[in-house]
Image 1 (cartoon, rainbow, N blue to C red):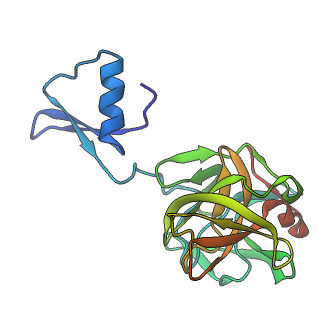
Image 2: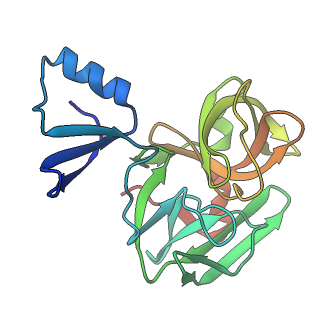
Length: 229
């Protein structure tokens, strides 16, 4: 059916359990495919699917802030990014992420860390499932009115439209009529559309549903490239 799910065999209840994030969508897909599930299969709606903690990638809750896109340097060393204004001492799942370098001034707000206890993946968590990141979009190619999405550990997933590409100089400002796009803790998280990296969460603007991010191409100041495979 093309719908991501988790599953479990409940031996005590003698049934198979399927876990989906949208029961209505799943039911509609079954009906369209003319599939009738056996009585010993129970479908359960959950807030989110399971995630492997052995991997590290964009959109995870770090000890402070949110992880940004996975990257590699010129030597091929892999790691993860976050906002430069976040603490340089970061951990994930209780394990230290060694600080490599960072910058927080002018158009730059980025730092990166290696992750020796994890497998660095070209993924981004969007609040429902992980999406692969296959490319990046330069600031010069991002435009007012464009639709973009983000994930932060405080506010979760959300989307809006770009209202400025020159906020405080070179930052990208985004507005949503309905979603709270940012709160403390979201900093460093990924902004994306589809499978393309757009930027790293910098801050929110109160009052209102506005936030802004550093365009992803500015990570090159640290000699980094977005991990795309």
